[in-house]
Image (tube, rainbow, N blue to C red; front, side, top):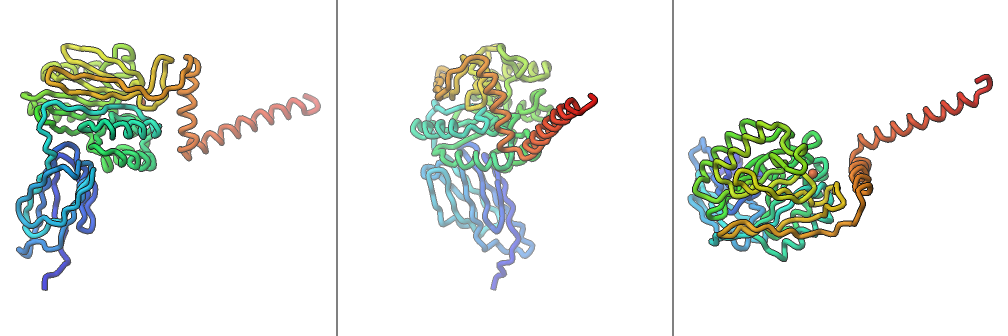
Length: 382
Ligand SMILES: [Fe+2]
């Protein structure tokens, strides 16, 4: 009789990442339209693995994807609108290829940035997106206000309502607290990755640091751009390298921004999508088109700013951007400033225990000082 005390096989993923792997159940989040899964089973006994390995693949159009398999047996396939699950067993080396058969050159996607934990806006975006049925959604950072684990759980509950693949990039607020970066990486995506839609390559970067991209990320980016040299290229990153109106909010390092823009120009990137600045603005720099959109829900700065998101159409002859406004209360400049302060204070008072304790201590000390001063003034002989 075969023993069921087997070691777990090893799993490698391309076009996604392994979220968890326990008790022979692997959860994989797809990030793109082609996901390759390789399974290796090291067998000291020389026997194939018999205990089925269950794979849950999320963030795919489960009802429509095609699946091919080499080695062993693949069975018990269950599909849903946004995920699929199956069992594999048998051979020590197995390859599984899951593809969304999208043949067209043109496609559309919904794009937004800076939700900042204003999840009623995100819910509205997702509801409309489900009716628009674009190829995918891209949330370009600052989806949470602090990157706390509970923020990510709330976020994932809402992202779960999306009926189309949902991709993300990391923003500075998503890694604000200790562990925010790890939570993002474990739950949503690696720091940077790429995927293709036929002849278009989409490159997603991490510009959550003030200075811009790190040296090793440039190495990765240069290679990706090189690999995509015969393709149309779209680049997504939270903090834009420059912004004519609000440049103090772009990369803080000018050489870093210059390096980035030179690369974009040299590799003829068609469009760079940024966020971080809570406005909508477009500009052209050295033949590259830049769009900045940060109207997902974070406090607006100017009376003219409105909450919004974008519906982007990648067409044969160019990229068309349509702005979809979200309900925005009218306000004067002073009100916008008050909103920014209120938004940050309220957020921390309601969700940050330490901030609440410090605020309470500060208020107590202030009140005590005032009482002591008043009492010393009233004391006889003073
Ligand atoms: Fe933001």
